[in-house]
Image 1 (tube, rainbow, N blue to C red):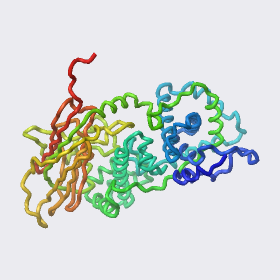
Image 2: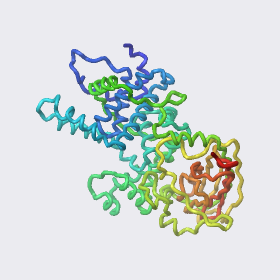
Image 3: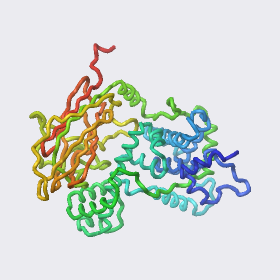
Image 4: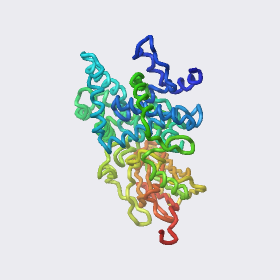
Length: 509
């Protein structure tokens, strides 16, 4: 079998980094032929292992992926898309296996497989103990403390983009989202990684007693809960916040560039994969994915969501954004409006922190407005982002400029210049700080169907912040609607007008 046509994808995938470090698992004189998708084998196994956290299950799922790829070679759109197609198959197989695990708890399967791993083919030595220790070591290599604050959706996108080196078009194809949605997901994840890196930099200095009490003064095992506490402490502690700002000053603007990290792959057990592939080939009636028109598998959990997306494509939302000025603040307080992205979200996930509670409630036309929900607390794991289809026309107008601005100067209060634009159904607010002092700002709204990428923060003079306001199609009202977004303090108001699903003409059968 010629392997010349696989060399270019191997260089792109990065999956060959771990290949060749371990001697062949079979007899040297009877070495088996290489797999057809050999350049991607380590990457695919690493992805399955990171999702399933079990070597045996990941091996079986990888065999299923290779079997499906062999049975449906014509579904691969193009040779340049082969890597993304294989990762999409791996994602489908992992989701199907997770669904089976939740439904049946795998009781019968574990009972059947127990003799195979209990020493039926092993010599009476310490090999099982060594194997278990080796597997724990490989799982530990998949840890990424800096990504502890990301949501499951963001973590999956980061793993595919950073560890597996998938580009944005490939990532969008694997996740089944538009490229703009994949790029936005990566940008939000990069912001959270930068926040965690700054918090870890504060921990490494060891100069704050509160941080020492949080970390226990020993080796730090950064869990999601501990990361949330550290980030909140950095927000509230002036000393730690200044240190974090110095770390941010030496780095690019959070989210403006990709995350750079050297993340290893785990070598696939080729002998075990080959045996599992033979078992998969003997199986009859094994489930196969449903493929879309591009040849990529459809998410097994996405049938209902797919119907909703098809229905949402018929909805045209026109957004009219109106803006106002308001005061400003610093980068690390920008997330104080609620729990950070990926932090534990319970019944109080939309609560406002104590610092924000002291601000006067925003008002639009005399009616009080609610604070935004944190857009990062969504429970969605697949499908397109929660906003409607692209808008054919967008207009922007200023309806309220808030309180008159004081003259600028070294001791003058801070000012906030607000610019608005629209990208499809997404309203983009750009806040630029000027004046002589930082000022805290907060967004509020009377519309529960609007979602903001950031709800509060602090901007120092000369800094800017970009806030995205999207429409949640699931809770969007029927027919034409008008919503207002307030920026406090300062009394700035942004009007957002759109059109949801048309009202039913009559009773449906």
